[in-house]
Every structure is written in structure tokens, then in C-alpha cells.
Length: 118
Image (tube, one colour):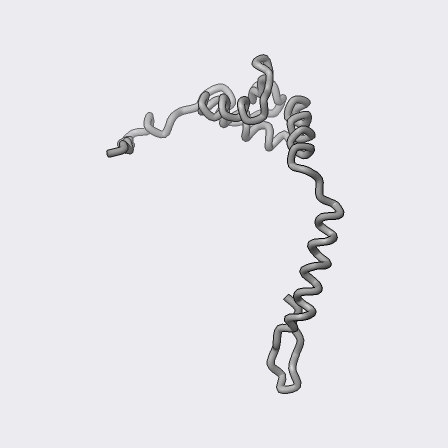
């Protein structure tokens, strides 16, 4: 939005300038855009090479350990080979809980609520 101060001191929107600015921004985005298919292919290659910040890898490795279903969905989405793995133990960083995870339901006084469809 392009705004300007009017003679009375109030701000007003310059609709013509705003329309022109939006067109300029859109043109710049289109010039640097690339098809999603290409982006997905390059991201998949990064995943295969494990080319991500250690914190990101640890987050995914921890999530995979906690949820087989999530790991399977991740593998399917990115079309990863069956032998591709990402484990916290392989990251070479000390992390609390890297060898043991406890489900919240194991804590004292926790009562699991199960949702069902009716």
C-alpha cells in the first residue's frame, strides 16, 4: 500500500500508486520464481545429502524416533529410498534424550484422552 499525508495532516491511500507498486512487485517475483517441481527436486537432493542445519536434522531425527507414521509420511512425500535414515545418534552432538524418549502418558498423574469419531 502506498500512502501519503494529505494537506489536512491525515494519511490517505494512493490507490493508483498502490496498484502500480503491486504490479512492480509481482513482476519482480515472477522474474526470480521457479517451478515448484524444480524446487522440490533440489530440496529432495538436500534431504538425501542431509544438507541442513544440525538443529533441523536433530528435530527431524527426534520426530522420526517418536513417530514411525511421521517418518513414513516424510519418506513417501519426498520419495526417499528405503535405506535413507536420519538418527540423532549419527549427528555427533550431545543431546538430552537422544537414547531414551518417554511418552507423556508415562508420566505420573497423566490420563490419556482418546478421541474417537462418532
